[in-house]
Length: 498
Image (tube, rainbow, N blue to C red; front, side, top):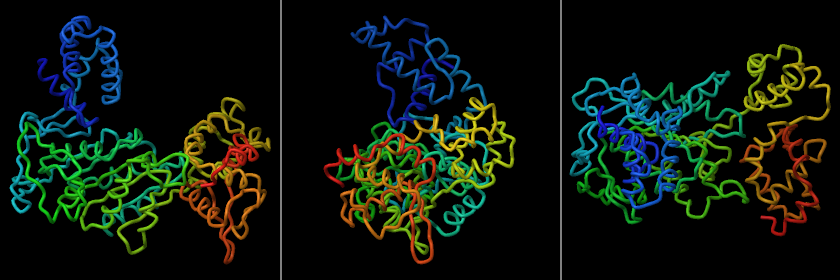
């Protein structure tokens, strides 16, 4: 494997994960690392300081460590890439190279053939009797132990494969197992799609950047490429080849979002994780960050336009498009993921907790949340030598590492939501919405808005009782709010309720 091959492979890996090709300085760092040269030589070549080269190199090694799942540095870079080629992670299949769960074009120097019009498209699988699965799953977590989500998995498969659900949200509080469920779902249904793509929105990428990287993957899979739209989204052909514009009909139906062309032309499974990260913090749930409103356009049109693809959104906040458009007979659905029941006992037993008579009590306190239970089980082992009886004998719930985990969703709350959460935590019994507490300083309309927002964040529990509904917080969230929020201080700081 010569230096040029390694640079081509490295560029493909970086491009598949970031949507960007290696820059000249990065190319030089890799080339010189391959040859065992010092950073000072690169600095002289690029007329910059050696410190700058080291900083760029450090970021590059961190990126490759993330991509390959093991430590990569200047000393072992060559060995790591040779291992990729020689192991079963690398194989050739005609025009494609497969690395792990990612497919690439074998020849990156040429633009994929682009048809003159949609009617001129050639089937992706022309000449093959077996369909060629095109996956981009580098950002999908590894599949772990599956804790009794059979019912939820069956429901999701029914919606996607048999009821042609086009837009689907998997929702729930942090730690409940949304991503784990989605991973198992993808593993079971991926063979039904031409393209399978998993992307995380944890870094809050603007839609233009996310769309560019996803369309690049379609191009690598042999799909034709749309031209720039009126909003300036660039053409994505390789090698500078001209790309035809979509027809007026296509442009009109997709609202200027080229990604939608692909979802209509091919059967695609697109998963976006951490979707709440494109929403604003400090406001009610579902309000996009400034400049991110086009995500709402994408979600709405995926649900409304006719196609055979499915977009799955995973997050802790219900997107407003889902809330407005979903319905039993609509191709837009949401699954609110609740805690595990008795099956959660398996998690506790794996952690060495053996007092079966007390397991159900602990599961109820922590609402069957898999991650919460793993955290508390570790704490019980560390502090109480695995004794559930001793831990549960204390009336005060000890949060431990759970407290830092819950900072994430609570830091996203508006001041009015914090007020209401503090009020709910102070109530000893579930409450109704018949009367707004005077000290909240909220109108009835504002109060209802806040309660709806907290529900969309999976932070409150609803208890139906006859023809009325009552609301409360689970014990863990009550303890967190009491520990971290002082209602008088919150009320003093809250000048504008919404």
